[in-house]
Image 1 (tube, rainbow, N blue to C red):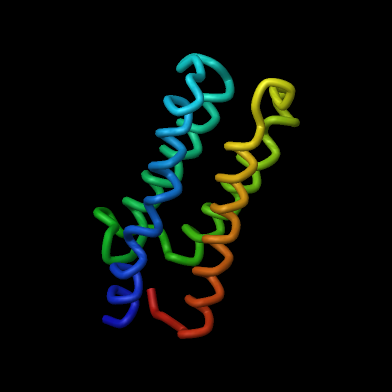
Image 2: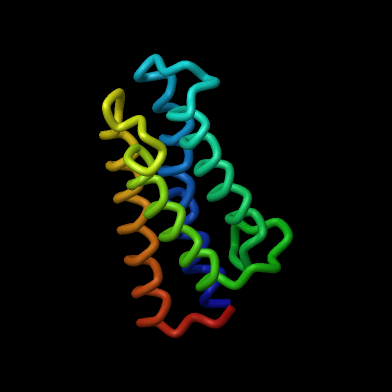
Amino acid sequence: MSSIDYNQSQAGKRYLIPILMLIVPFLFKLSHSSVESIILYSASATLILNGMITKCGTGFIRVMPLNVYLLLYVLTGMFLAVSPWILNFSHRIFMPHLILGTAAIIHGLKRRSEFEEHSYEE
């Protein structure tokens, strides 16, 4: 009931960051087989697929609790933000990974605080 309303209102925001992750390699003319692109594609796929199995208004299978999804969103953002230095490609490009990773972290933490504040049921 109220959790579905909450989650449906967040659907566009939930998928905006993963869609941007898919677009960045084209905007920066990155090789599609480079580690820089693969990291972005993998992070995007992770967030989209996890969103599809989340217990919310936009989930298709609805097996993952929303708080677990939000935790994975934050963890994926953390990995994406530091991946240029961990995987040693920061000398070529790092800003898109850092910006999108930070955006994912902020989005996940903000949604989690709203989720806890309103005590939505899963």
